[in-house]
Amino acid sequence: MVVISQNPTMKIEKIRDDIDLPIINLLNKSKAIKEMVRACEEYGFFKVINHGVPQEIISQVEEEAAGFFAMPDPEKMRAGPPYGCKNIGLKGDVGEVEYLILQTNSPHYMIQSDESNKFSSAINAYVEAVRKLACELLDLLMEGLLGSTPNPTTSSMLSRLIKDSESDSILRFNHYPPLDVPSDSPKIGFGEHTDPQIITLLRSNGVKGLQISIEDGVWIPVNPRPESSFCVNVGDLLQVMTNGRFVSVKHRVAVQPYESRMSIAYFAAPPLHATVSCLPGVAAAPLYRSFSWGEYKQAAYTRRLGDTRLNLFAL
Ligand code: GA4
Image 1: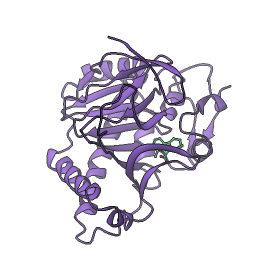
Image 2: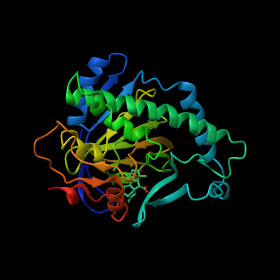
Image 3: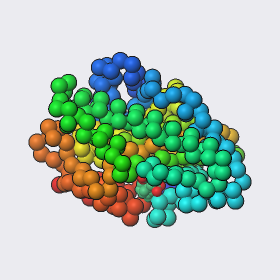
Image 4: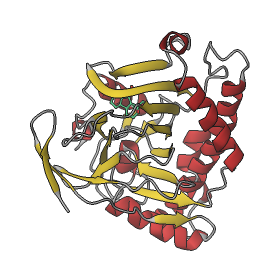
């Protein structure tokens, strides 16, 4: 079934039936490589299972985050600037969301209100585990792109950027309070955008809401199952590095009636000074000029959430 509706900016859009994104089982590496590469080319999104992130690490951080968002507003405000509500970015975008944004290379992540330090230590354990997974996925993707006997220095190029102590990776907790009445047109928790970084690893509490748009004006809701999986998506930088072979796809989050959605996204990014360009051996004629992540990040923050930024760097 396709639902035709008008979004808040009066743009006509179609909402298609849910899709099951490709589910990649990391236990079988050679099959995983092929399937991941295909998924990055077709959807820019896939899910991973048997990912090696211990369930207790995930449960602990999810429990602490749920406890944090359940606190009264003044308590949440005590967390300081990592906490935000409704305002997204610096250019006036808003959404039905409250969040915590943490810089992962900062040794003291935290959250002033976390006196027991339980949330902070759960976050530290989670970041370490999820960073390891991001690096493994990037190494496998590089092997898929460059062939099975690549130069080891080239094949670990991306994961080294993420492991760098100056990596600008971010951890973001999002809480989307439920709609109290169902609505015909989607109520947007987080508006359409692409992720600026290299790759994003997302966990959710099993409540739907994520939608992707492979074709302009057509939105496809993503089935939140399996709950044990991570949803992975290509960011703008990976599109540049693969010269457009992997696609950074627009996505958004619609608020659900009666159910509150919580998600935790790890945005894997290089250091601010790192140069971003087409990877060696990927293409003869680059589609984008070289730039630093700092330059790209600034371009993202000086624009609106839904603006396309990659075309500013196209050759
Ligand atoms: C989208 C991905 C991440 O959530 C984020 C977002 C950031 C923010 O919320 O501050 C941005 C958005 C995101 C892209 C364009 C800019 C920056 C809001 C915005 C308008 C933390 C990120 O890195 O980029």
